[in-house]
Image (tube, rainbow, N blue to C red; front, side):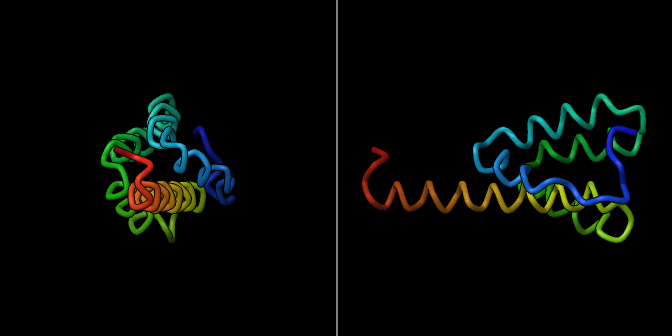
Length: 94
């Protein structure tokens, strides 16, 4: 197993979600796992925020690391969306 299911993930996943590479890293991280469950959930990371929510609600009582990682990625992606909307609203994106 790649991650320790009894511990929460690092909040650094928020930053990875915010800069837009969190989904890719989580996918790679899951696919190198020897555990088939991790590989299945790794594919869900391709779905972006929807995959994060599915993983969070399916695993929130079973796997603290995976559920917290998905939640942190979701938070980072929401922050990325908010920043993009604000920048677009200010006319900085043309």
